[in-house]
Length: 492
Image (cartoon, rainbow, N blue to C red):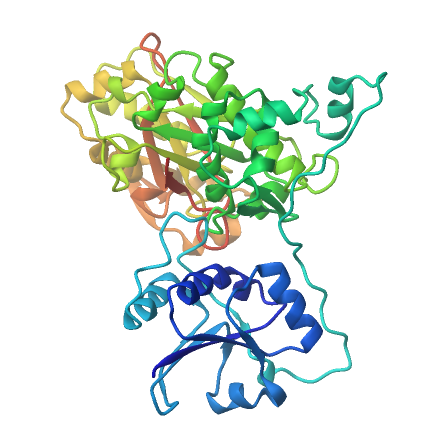
C-alpha cells in the first residue's frame, strides 16, 4: 500500500507551516508518518506545540534521511508498495501538497487565502549539517491557549488599567468577558482556534484574542467578519509584517476594502477618506494596530524603529468608491468577482496630496500626477518600490471623458514618470546614484530620463474620495518583491 513520509525538524519554521496540512491528510485516512530528525524530548515538544495528530517517529542516526538523499526539510516522500520513492518533494509548496493529496484520493488541503505563502524553502537536512558541540536550539512557539483574565481591585479604573497595559497612546475600551463573548457571537469559530502568529514576536492570534482587541478598539461584533481574514492576511509572509513593523521607514499596513461588504458593514469610501468619518473604518484599522501591538509586540518604543512614524499606525483603513469609478474595482482587477468582498493590505507611507485644478484632458491631469510619482521614495531612486495611487472622482471624470481605461492610465504613468539624467550629474548626487547602472533610460518630452518604476504593475490604482475637489493622493511603498513587502488580497 502506498504511504507518505514527512521528514521534519523541530526548530524549522517551514516544518511548522506544513503540519496543519499533514493533519488534514492524516484525518482523511492518508497513510502518513512523520519522521523527526531530532531527539525524543524535542520531538515530543514539537508534537505538543504544533498539535500534530499523525504518528511521528525518530530518524535514528538519520539513516532514512540518508537513504533518500534529502537536501532540505520538510520533505514529503511518497512510497510505493515496495517502499521505493515515487516522489520526493522538498520544502513547502501548496501545489505540491495538493498534488500529493490527489494521488492518495484526498481533496485539496491547501487554499490560496489561509494566511500562508504559496511556497517557502525549508532548512538543510540534519545529515548534511556540520556536527558541533552546540546545544539544540530552543523551541520558538507556545501552544494556543485561552486569553488571560485579570480581576481588578475595586478602586482600579479599568480604562486606566487597559491604557497602561494595552495602549497605543489612546484609551481603549476595557475588554470584559461579557463584551468579548458578545463579539464572539459574530464569529462562527472556536474561540481557541489559532488564526495566525503575529510578527515580529509571533504571538498567537486566536479568535478570542482577536475579539478582545476588537473590543478595545471599539468595534461592533460584525467587524469579526473582516478581522479574521485580516489577521490571516497580515500573517501572509508575502506581506512581510515583520519587516513592515520593524523598519525605520514611514510605512504602515493600509487596509483597502472592496465589494458589497463596504455597504453591509458601513465602510467609508467618499469625502474625508482618511479621516474620522465612520466607526467601521476607524475601529477596524485600530483593531489591527492593537493586534500588532499586543500580540505582535511591535511597540514604538522598542521593536518599531520608524524614524518619523506614520499616523496610520492609529488606524489606516479605507474603501474604494466603486460607484464613482468607470473602471473595474481593485478586487475585480485582481481576479475576484464583483459580488465578492475582499480586503487588501499594502505597506503604505502617509498620503501625499496631488492637486490639479485646471487641466482639462487626461494627459494634462496625468502629467501632473507623473511629476508627483517621480518623488516616490527618494527622487533619484528608481525601480525598487511601488506606489498606491488614489484618483479622486473629479480627476477620473476628466480622464474618462477622453476614453482612457485604467490600463491606459497605468501605462501612461509608467511611460512618463522618470528622473532626468541631469539630476545625477552634480558632485553629490545622493541616494539612487550608485544603482543607476540598473535603471532603464527612456525619453520623456525629448529629455533623457531614467524610468521610475520597474513595471506598470508597480502602480496600483483605485478610485476613492469625495465627488467635490480635484485632489488625488499617492502613497509610496516599502521595499517590494520577495525581499520586501508585497500587496496581498484576501476574500472576506
